[in-house]
Length: 182
Picture (cartoon, one colour):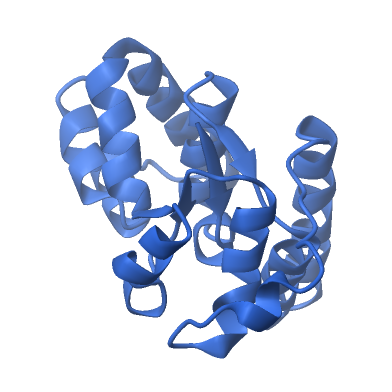
């Protein structure tokens, strides 16, 4: 299954790590465009120079780890598309060009299901997607959750627990599922 990841699910670190970790485990093939990655980099500017540098480094890493994930919209696709926020048509165009099965986003109002369905696409929220992967592969997703938790604690010097960490990352169903085992 090919899934186009919107900027809003790549930019938050914990959400991105859970999604890309699921991709590494073979649950799906991730897709994005150069413009989506550019939006992520521009969003990191609000964190200051360190945030920008970190975003550039993380973008370079995901490009290296998934060299075939970046798709370029085919000429003319974007011009024929409509979404409530015209600034998001490039995301839909990339999903079409990449032959994605769905767009993974938290921007529900900007990606109406009926509009995506006209293009043969679904809209998936990251929490429902990751929870579904947990239902199929609880052991693998628990291991992924433990790794993300360890990294969050290492980076923050804190003592996060899985449920608050994932709830903060807007992954409440997955948080509840993983909290019983981690």
